[in-house]
Length: 353
Image (tube, rainbow, N blue to C red; front, side, top):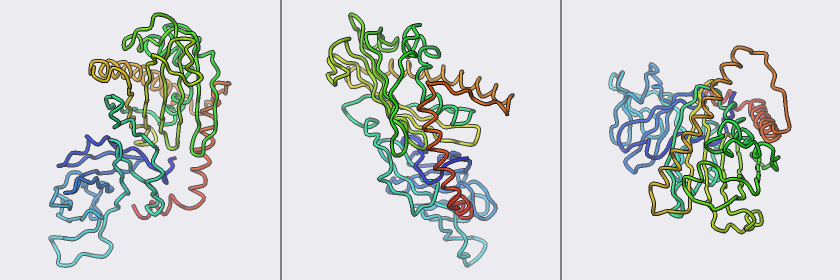
């Protein structure tokens, strides 16, 4: 069950080339992305209205797509403008076109009612393309529900255990013992966690040397339908980071997006950025490698969790205090989905697809 009236990340900008097509399934629907002659991204249902053949197997003809099964030609609005086997084109010959916005190297797609697609609702991810920051884009594919990954990202107490030698505290459980502050936002939650006078995270020691202990922070918004925007870092202990004085700090920004592929698979887009050592590409690469290694640790644990849950369909989660953020977010998302279904949005979208 998915929320439809929202912006999902469909791809990185570099994944949609000037020629050819990118086929990708999003919330259970096949989508084809391509660029017109002005390099604007166009998104269609990847299914010809004639016999259901994938348009991603088609051919570009100017700003149109030719289905390479029986030759129907569609303009960038999705309207069929040519059927080689007949002189007239029926009025209902069209494919569904999605609102698409390309911004800060991410391509966003609106899967619901096009009339409600407001680009102003797209979260600010300017760090992805900001010259004051450096980062390397990443993508992972999960064979699990996006909701399990959401739970992982909303409870960072797992850093002490899943990421003991990467993002965590080198074997200490201090990070898990710090209770975060959780605030409700209009479309998500804000989670703030400080760990004072502690050892730097293992991945930070590979990028920046500290003579002693540090104050660490993770402050992030987690927004519907699965967007994480994080401010994190470390500064020498006692220099005033909690009060906003980030002296000799290693600061990072992270933009992450979960886009459901199906009920049981997920697209995961991410980029971790740093604002120091900007002239040293090896720092960017080392940061990327550390983050990818940590995310594979997450993937191994969440995939194993998914397998055990599949064996126990009636299993009920036992709540603990650390679940506060994920519980609040889950209630918000489920309420939004229920309201959307009650309004009949889902049925209207299916009819137009």
